[in-house]
Image (cartoon, rainbow, N blue to C red; front, side, top):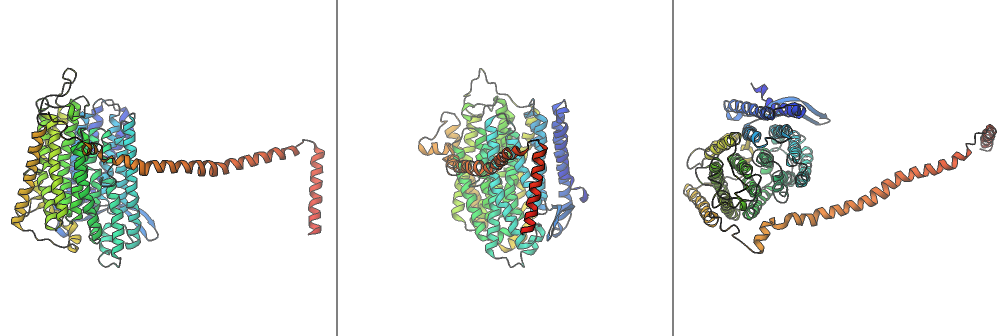
Length: 632
């Protein structure tokens, strides 16, 4: 059975080719949607079989390499296209294909009637294919191929409505910001090959213990890798593309934010955890950047009114929590939060899409209200997602968020812990502000022209399944003081080499219980305050003044980047164009043409057409040659 695991990636590629090449010839749009969805479902089934096969093996043998073909051989550089099936890659594949399948099914209903229906599903399948290659590649170059693939697909899907200028601008922004991060990733690969002579993950991990590579080189490599992670996973300073990614259709937002692209940076750190464990300075940087990103994005989300923008900044903030965990050396906990976040964030984005669909494309929560009676399934499922992300037990978000807070506290990172708690408070606050303004209170829309309605079953069934996962998904990572932590034990073979280097931290049971109670209390207070302020819809703008406006304008970071980076680069490119391109390059090319043109004007005068003239020139030439020979 192992030899067929490569079909995990092949099936979405087949779906892309079918819809991409023949989609316009398929008259029934649902056929395109079914083809795209079934291909991802097939990948999910094979991934489940891979999981069952891996679990049947001894823990120390739970790593299988599936060679495909020899890819690059040049000197000492030998790279094979091969897949690595181990607990980490299987976990990521289950998230990508499982949640991705539900998003595909939802998209059949959401995209109904769109003239680019088949093209949309072709791009979705290609996105899944690229992300699966990213997590399954057994070497950094194959990972980078998937890394660039999801970047391409994000460009295609964010700009799917290409006739709208803001969609094209958002796609370009995502593309260029990610290229900055990708440059760091490429430099890291060069340094890794220079230091260890290989880009294969197993070979790198085997070479690290006995290597003479200095700590400074580990720091350089991991910092460059982290630059790549800040691009893909939207951390300071490269987070600015993700909120604008809302320009794409809502299923795209769910796919990017929950199941694929933004988790790539967290996964990459997990896959190269041994490298990061050898660079304590980088670990501190990762944790601090994650902390600052989580806090900053949460403060921005408090002041947003666009339902998708609130969730977008929520994603940036939750990614910050994941990086806090990775920076603290809690690699399993970071992947655990990736898993639970995939459930409740996909649920909330798809729920937001159902709201937008029912509200005839309205996205401003201040123009909604009273929707819980009009969209009961959407309301209940969205409510579950809100409870989960707020960290209320026994919903999934509670377990992963509490585990991160616990790891930070017992590792002695008290300032980071304090900011993380404050961020958790704000998370619950802005999420319940969103729920209150959307579903509670009196309608604030024109009831004569807007008639909210529940979405079709194709959209509500995925919401129900994701709601169930958001309720029960956290039980795979129960606190040690309550029950064995399954996901930590499951991922132990992957992270054991890195954890052996990092210091251990003793957990005090009574303190752990206190932290659990404290985190729940913080979330409950935030929910109560938010409901009291916004449930009636009377206090739409609870804050005022300069700081609130600064939050609403997202700290004006985009404007700052425009002034400091974009405009100077545009000016510099204009200078280069006028001097280097117009005067030097064009001048050389055009000048050469003018020289030979003028030369031809002079020399063509000797072409008289008179035979005697040509004979005279020939005799003169012969005489000149003879004189040269005699006088030499």
